Length: 509
Image: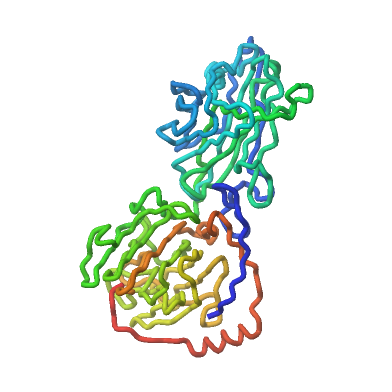
């Protein structure tokens, strides 16, 4: 009903999304940098204290790589996979990839100083490197978008011929620092000509926005007494590891495209003559595709002649009466022709009085949110024009109740909470029908039209922050609060007096 939506999009650096207001937080504290660094502990060659305390603690699902090493190893309880390639994918079957290095060397760690731990010394002895002004790229693959990780980069060079070498790690290849989410660690000296130190580490905390995350590595000389002071020294990496931090307890489900369609309970593809067919069939399909704005996304392609192409339910998630859930996703439609639904909160079993309590659909180019009361009596809660081939970010809050006075619905579009036709941001009604309810995403209806619905960043959680999708290319949609004008309020009150209600013959969604 109200068509004015004003928001600010803040661009975020590679693979990392900033979390302002209620969005998912990337860093432990938004006002601080996401990295920390320090020198690796050292002692004289006669020392006998094993010290690998600088390694970050790892949890289940971590992986590490020892570069220019043909063998796997343990340092303490931390496993490092031998990464024998100078570039390319390697380390635990492709979990880590390298680019821009090109050279290997196995003599970076000498005998003058030691960590005290022979295994740690061996880990630091080998490395991949490049000379000159080269910049290296370290990519962690097979991540889970939305999961927070801590990565660690280890560099060492105890050769007496080297002094002043300093490492920088950044999440952008220009090594800029800025409010847009670009960060680069300050140069940290790790080579001291074979005296006093064995190396350095940089730790980085990030939240994956895709299934891979790339960091950039460069070496400069920061020793004023060196003839090479201020000059690029190429790039170097001895070892690296990444470990997931604790999964947010309030995030219930994530539809990760890396897991293909197994994240759903099943796929529903139905022809115009009411025949359910397999995926894919006759040009109709649910698949994972690469999108320039969101990376890997779900592609629901419905050709003319098909009634529906939908994903039914979230695997492992069964909505329960008495709970409130937030569902978030981004969508992009190729056609805004009138349909039956691009999202359903669908009932199953019996007794069936509503069938589809909540529906998000297109009506003549308008995105429309509808509620269906018992008797399949529909109410338009919200409507606004949308454009084809444009990404929109949506969040719906559903308080689940089998009472007409117990359930609640709230809706956000592009980060802005919407005012419903009753003049409020909340609608009360029955949201549990039959013996179970499930969400459905995709495209249903518009039988005579070709429609593709691309869906990204699918999540279910207990808070808005768990599920709020970022904008395209990692931009975070930040709503600018704007009080409703008196005119808007007056219109809302008038609209509330004339809620559009209509009765439909029962039909199965």
